Amino acid sequence: MSAIRHALSVKRTDDFAQWYQEVVSAADMAEESGVRGCMVIKPWGYGIWERLQRLMDDRIKAAGVDNCYFPIFIPLANFTREAEHVDGFAKEMAVVTHHRLIADGKGGLIPDPEAKLEEPLIVRPTSETIIGDAMSRWIQSWRDLPLRLNQWANVVRWEMRTRMFLRTSEFLWQEGHTAHEDREDAMRETLRALEMYRSFAEDVLAMPVIAGEKPENERFPGAVATYSIEAMMQDGKALQAGTSHYLGTSFAHAAGIHYQDRDGGQQLCHTASWGVSTRLIGGLIMTHGDDDGLRVPPAVAPWQVVILPMLRDNDGDEALLAYCEELRAGIAAQTALGEPVRVLLDTKPGKAAAKRWDWVRKGAPVILEVGGRDMENGVVSQLRRDRLWGDGGKPDFAAPAREECAASIGGILEDIQQSLLSEAQERREANVTRGVTRMDELETFYAEDQRFPGWVEVQWSRPTGPALDKVVEQLKALKLTIRNVPMDAAPADGACIFTGELAVERIYIARAY
RNA sequence: CGGGGAGUAGCGCAGCCUGGUAGCGCAUCUGCUUUGGGAGCAGAGGGCCGGAGGUUCGAAUCCUCUCUCCCCGACCA
Image (tube, rainbow, N blue to C red):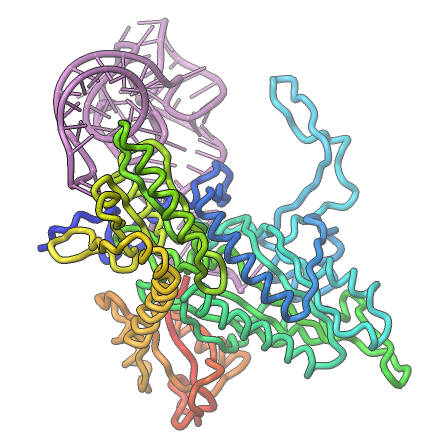
């Protein structure tokens, strides 16, 4: 029996899917657009994306990759060159067929039959083919390699079933595309990007992930090897949060990306591609959200500290605002996580208590409420979003002196960042099960009444082709998927759970988004 | 794309079966009261009932088509 009155109407344990949707709307992150599968990203949601984008972009640039921008439209013919690639995408591409509208005579507009395009244009689902075209022109010699490009863009995939941030028809992402002299260098880049994503997820998003290679059946269409980072959501399901692909020479072959080597011979480039998307925000919600809304890690919070003056619409307000402004300036002069602290003095009309709950739902890391009595005592009322509730079902306010509050804010924000990560790490560790060696154990483990099944680590013999298909079918019957082969796992020392043969590596099994 | 559910005021919903031109709660606005906590009282504003056709004297309500959302599948980089 809890006296706590939560800020959301749905609890995670009651209906996780409903809870997720309530967080998205209650935290004012995004809303439906009226266009199938497309969302409007509102300022708070987009602000988080901008933070994430900036920090990721810093890392991409620091790695020596150059940004560029390619067209949203790709000629249809580009897709016909790499057979496997087109097979993987053909069913979900948006196609532009006309370039003009005319009146239909009934007050509406229709595509002008006279304005049909000679060759349809594809709205990019990913840009391998069009960037590959450019690479074939830009690369002549081994001296031009490696060529490492990145673009921030929107892409469109005509998904059957969509969910805000997790799978939308249009989404925002970065896609890195690189060309190399040989397999070794391309693989180095593929794994570099993977490690960049792993550390970014943990250091910036406070989202622990498992980095590893995807099984053959989960590879990007046309790829030789696909790697991913996988995060555990609070319902125990896995979310693929970023991917990095070694594409071999097949895309280079299709696009004609070759170079003259040191001995004067013609060689095909080895290419790689890697990307993360707005899906990371979905992962953020399902990693850090609680029954009061979102909790944004300070590193990506658009506002890390929000000051709410308790205005009374009387003569005292002026002095209170001045007191708050000094507080704001004092905090803005601090640094946290290597950057100036982002602090908002929220003077919008409205009662502080009502505004507090809005910011709780949005997940601002620290909320400072300041009333006349605080001012008299030279203190502020400080609330940490990561530990909202105190004894008695009431928000757990601290009351530091104003100057002390400002001086300590950097440390508090860093502590929140760390504690969100620790909490997520502990939850994941508590929900990874090892030592499952038989299929019937796996079946029991994931029986329907298990509320929080989490992940299971098993050993396997890495079957391929039809043998792998059979394994995938078996798992599918249990609604399970192979997530990846973790990079840092202990060597195999047992039998394959599927075939009984000698195991060669460990894999994670989980239900997935 | 298959099965199920749903679209009525900014949000959440009732009304629909048994047609007679729309209602509740929250939010908003105004006034008064209150004031260290998600305020109270009174009043007010706001909707061509997702869209298009059809039946009818008359459609939120009945019929057809269509769009969008949610859940379960299939699909999914």
